[in-house]
Image (cartoon, rainbow, N blue to C red; front, side, top):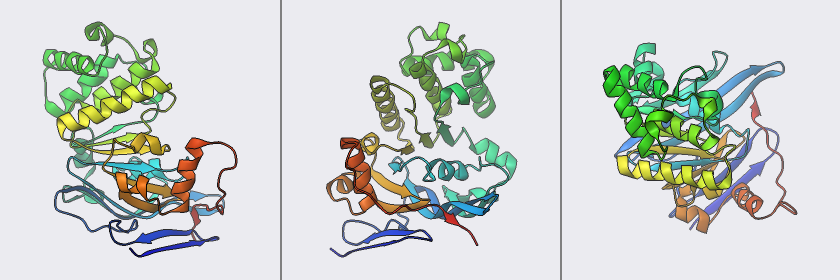
Length: 306
């Protein structure tokens, strides 16, 4: 097995290139059945000191019914990458590259076509349900809004479907809870509501962006198992974004490790945990086991654009 690493400071360059059972993390041949393909995607933001490249030439793909984990520390570009897929970034962002979903070039879709795609075929579970849910609408009303908009259900049918979804996702007394507002629910229940909204229209791809943020350990495990169960039951593809390698272990088919806006390692989940090739991946794993005497890596920062 051939393996080479290159680490330089200054302009970001941090690569793990390998052959054999591993695939290059910077580019992967798209196999038949690919649902989402991200090709050389870069995102830049204007700052007072010049353009900042938050995502730098990322290429990834997710197969139909498969789960991809994207792991990295806060600020590495994970969320920016996921929001770029559905064009949920602010107008100041400059995006280049290509994103294809089931063969369609998303950056070329009209605003109306993109609006129909969001929620119906690609759904998102955001980090904090307290801010992603509308505080002045009942949780049932927020679920039925998606059902009526994308599936054309009538009011009574949509309400019945919303209650069924809440029940399936483990919320007791779902009919009464559907009339509650987000602030009347616990953090775990709010996240289940956010998942219910995302799953309501049976999307083909679910993007789960740090879905267990601010939840206690027990509730975290419940939410992660819920997502894994629903993905298998619906044969749904999933992009699971997290800073914790333990979250993707056993719940994804493949893992991509992200650092300073780049993918530094990518491999099937079991193989990555068995043979970590990037020093950054090793450092992430070590950070879970102890908080003292962690391995030190040269500091890399997102690229400043000339």
